Amino acid sequence: MSYLPIEDHGIIGNMRTVALVGTNGSIDWYCSPHFDSPSVFGSILDDHKGGHFQIAPVAERVRQKQFYWPATNILVTRFLHQDGIVELEDFMPVGLPADSNGYHCLYRRIRGVRGTVRISLVCQPAFDYGQKSHETRISENGASFTAPGVRFSLCSTIPVQRDSNGGVTSEFVLEEGKSHFFVFRNDRTDMPPPSAPTEQEAEELFQSTVKFWQGWLARCTYGGRWRERVERSALALKLLTFEPTGAIVAAPTTSLPEVIGGPRNWDYRFSWLRDSAFTVYAFLRIGFTEEAAGFVRWLDDYVSKHVRGEEKLPTVLTIYGEPNLPEKTLDHWEGYKKSGPVRIGNAAISQYQGDIYGELMDSLYLYNKYVGPISYDFWTRIRRRLNWLCENWQNPDEGIWEMRNREEHFVYSKLMDWVALDRGIRLSDKRSFPAEHARWITERDRIYEEVMTRGWNEKRQAFTQYYGSDDLDASLLIMPLVFFMAPVDPRMMSTIKSILQDPRDGGLVRDGLVYRYPPEPRIDGLPGEEGTFNMCTFWLVEAMTRAGQANPEWVDEARLLFERMLGYANHLGLYAEQTSAQGEALGNFPQAFTHLALISAAFNLNRALSEK
Image (cartoon, rainbow, N blue to C red; front, side):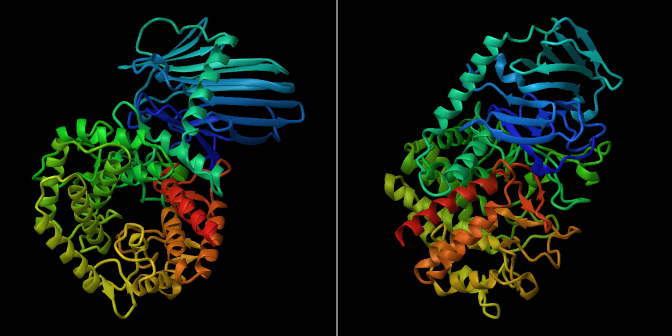
């Protein structure tokens, strides 16, 4: 089976894990029971050894269409052939009791819509990233797959046969109006697989899942232009939350390359404080408060057990708040389109990224404003953290882009340190919390003046990536978004104008898409030219929108950029981290960064257009 493009996948999930389902009916990525668990199906990273679970017609010249059941995360793949039409429905149950076995199940139903079509089923798990061999047993109700410490079962309404690759196969004829249901379940017991649900049971489970997702989405307060895109982004972000603890993962995949051929491949199945805090902002912007409460609960109940106030905050943690995710490579897998290495774990855990304090404090300030009051005990930890920052913000760091070859005084990190102290001052004033006000104000103002003097490049007439650099950095588009400076400040508008130039002229924008920093030379020390960074394109839209009060033409240009960027989503409205020069999705998929930035840009652009 050849590699299906990243963008030719949809996603299903249950706020514990996800599965990527290709337009060819193949589950190409699935970890169980959690996001960061070893993979069970991983053919998106090795099409020979990774394992997959495919249900599709046995025919040539089959056309496929893929869409979501309205306002849900239930995925439908429609196969159209001269003999008939069938639809494959994929979902994971949600809204169950916390200890329900249903959270360990993946449901697939194939329905005959028109005519009679011959269907093939192939289920070939590859446990522990394909490192564990397993035993396959056939039973009356399907099959079981057992490896040391692992047991999964396939519950089937039709007989299956063992194949030569440790999996099972079946072929059957599906008539119009008929359906078959399959359940793939993480099941440690030694009992034979249970029987597949009856047609009535399957329908009830399907409808309860529909009801959950539609009920959740009904809370969305966004009613402007691009509502469908905003809602799909919200549904995608919801799938990246880990309900048992409240953590939010950056993406549900690992090692999908930023450059075909590698080596820009990273594991994003963890909770970055930066990404999570931005996601909380996006949720709050459109009316979702439970997710923000869950994130604060994760910080309070889990992260606080592993992090001491006198030490730097880890950049990234596990979904249980642990700062322990050693990075290693899986050399037996070739990687997506032979773009190795495949990595699990992430060495960014050891980096100092000073900006995370700003994103975190901004999210806590918004939580206190829109969700619920910060407790005194929580405040004492915040207070210690801000005092630590007063003593350490002057240090260089690896920055938001996680440089693995250098530390610098990155301007983005400094301005987010300013945000941290600014929000701490505001929060203490609002709640009358005890605080070192004079010290915080002094350090906040020192940071501001330093950014305006050392971060500003007189020759470029723009803020640049780090002190003394001549290179632009798209992360600085966030300055007006976090109220560091007015969007119409001459320095901000000059920086936007510089960024809008083509990279060949020193800018960062090519055909309306934004590089995060100059594609050449490679400041990060890694080979290969990566794609444009989707989040940064949406940040440019928002920065131009906000500056529109001084330059009204920019609002119209921002709308055009936004509409063009919507055209780079996949057929379901999903985005990876980056977009290649050929318009292909690059990087892990789907990416929280991109979808949260879309929501914010849509909100502010819609408001600006409505006020014209």
